[in-house]
Image 1 (cartoon, rainbow, N blue to C red):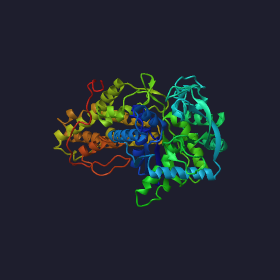
Image 2: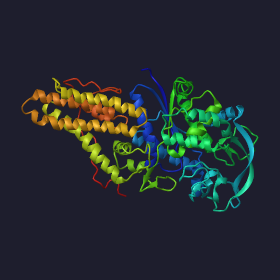
Image 3: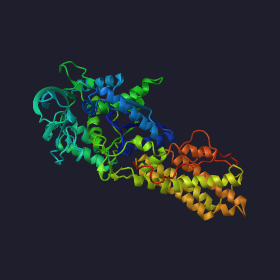
Image 4: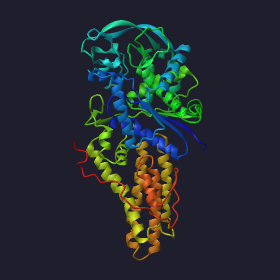
Length: 546
């Protein structure tokens, strides 16, 4: 199979607050699992994202604290980067929308769409706060959603029903700055003409028959309802400067337009750090390249309709291969939300749990098709009853037996029976089964397949009892342990995308060095074992108490 170029594009979090487990399970952990798998397959992966430093949540927080937006950006960008490092998110580049490169690429996209007739200057009515004496960007306005009657809908989107909104759509709008009722006033802005792209978008979306049903249906539903043209500039001082001067002062490109361009700008920034500044083109202009956008379901409209419309308008750039948007993680049936303080931060859990324990507990319940309710008790149960009891104990007892009875080396002779060969065949089959599932972005099922394979090895050991056989037939006991050791070697690779911290430790204990690929590694007889140590700590139940 030829090497594939795979872009893993991951949602850009606002640098306005701590990221919580809902974010990690919704977009970042799935993207990392997928990227690590494809690297093991030998594919050329480019995984990019960054902190969105222009979002109105940043200026809202800055206003509340009485500081400049950059103070908020610096604080939370550093915290977000630390969170990704703590849980092993394997970026090729994690950057921000505050770079000169991103501003330049955003302005280039603006000018290309303007040249191609996809942008238009219009006078529009926007909400103005008469007390604060300023126009209100989307997230400075709250009110009642006209679709579902949720009373705390934002001016850009309703968190309850997921509809994209304009502040003027809200019923009983109120200013988040002063609490005043906003007034409509005239202002001039550039609009992205989504209405001109509706037919092309529909034709493209109808070919995406393998997408998750809720993603495809949502996107097609937006088109059927009619795509409104959307303003891409605002009366704000924080953001990318408009590259034309016919709007007058006090205007900037708005965040929703520039944030999605980050995938392209980050790819170009990454390429600029290599010996080949044009390397980004292999993922963006080659029609054989693939691009996967990992986001939460609240970002479906922007990644299945708006960003593709921009790519179509630009021309010469690849459209998304898939947008495997996850549903929400809820805590006590309430959606995790950084702005509302629901769900504790990634860093909080990272201080209390081993990173692979946290990755496993979340990977086992990824909200791929439905919202998933998560509790600390469920995290503890998954770690203790599955990760520790099934996988950790398997590794420890097999290696400890081998160390004790075979002088710290793998047994030198191997005479497998049909049952021994069948076990190793089941591990080899798991590479095919789990690989196909991960390829289809069914990551939770992929992890379940791997853990079930580990359980099969435990069943094999309990049936053949090498700790008893060793007393009467060392040669046969050596074959049983060799079979289990070789199965564990394969499992260490199968777990690698999910458990990147401890999987190399397993191979080090087995005496397997060097890089591995998506196949069971060779483990010859008489290989010297490394230092045996427990992989995971069993949780006592109070680690996640406040």
